Image (cartoon, rainbow, N blue to C red; front, side):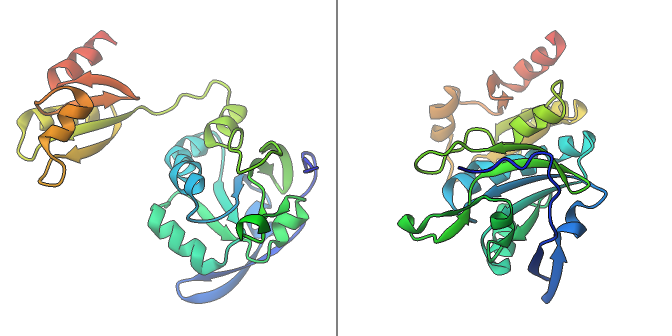
Length: 244
């Protein structure tokens, strides 16, 4: 049975990393002493759930974690430093510190090193998250012990809501746009004025108008989604803001 370490102090474990082409040794005290740190651990870099959901959401919510008193977000995996560094570049995870637990020493000390030899992984970390204050584990969210790779409780939203049950998440928008479209520029200005982060999907030879019509049902640009809800054109976005 996987052990919950809440209330315990994290022992000092060394990690071998490469920074700027140079080998360095950092340890648990460097990470946790006199600081508030959120940790999420996972089975492996570049694996599907880890790359598509687990790490990206922590990276996305990092500014809100900082607003709520978290000094650093650390991702731990039983991979070497070369793999973790490449994964960080691939994910553009600038808001996360990726730490290689290459020998599984930290996972073993936490009692969360598991055998995944059946799928060719060898010994890996179980998936979990935790809130650590000055080396003491305040809260852990450990995935249930079941077959496969469960991902139910160690997500960024769950631990952030533990830190602040009344947390307000930043709005996020997605826009389908066309180069040179004045209404697209107006929609982006409206979002900027509201301080809303957005992702722009610009139509091109590779991503045609037909693709946008299949997704939105509309043929004009821009087409705007806000927090997962379809809004529509720049006029409709402006009306949405006036009504809210």
